[in-house]
Length: 212
Figure (spheres, one colour):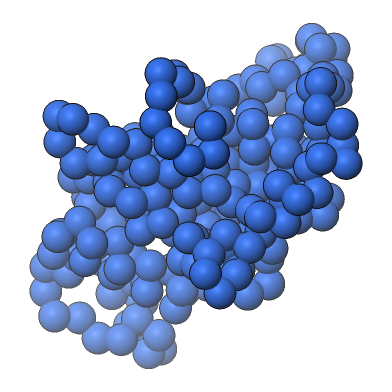
């Protein structure tokens, strides 16, 4: 289903795997959580870890899907503008799972870059609301860290403050100066500390990344 509600049950790892299949235009590799055992690479322990497994959909059909996912992040009317990164192309899909027992769950799957992808990700935030508001920016920060090995400080603080505002959490427990002013990095550390607290508060408990 693209839009709608039905009796579909998916685990986060299955959703991350779907993102990987789209990113690779039709194939995936067996998800695994180890790199080495006793200094022996995982792919030597199990050759199946590095075997391409193809789905039944022809590669040509992934082009419009990928275009739509890119537009979701970068397009004028896209649902995930908060996931956009200036120097990285992210293709994603927002989701909002209705919850009869409380606030809806926030969902976002994505992969990046668009060409020669390196990472696929699925983010689930229990009771987080719209996928565009909470899950998408979290995924964006994870992707930026994975690809660039660092996160732009200004962007990080802006997203942290926005997420905290949306969940109604008082991010800063004291008045602190601009984190970009030299010598004032302690404020950034305070923000990160309180961000972790806000993650726990909001139930941010499912972030799965998939190296491609």
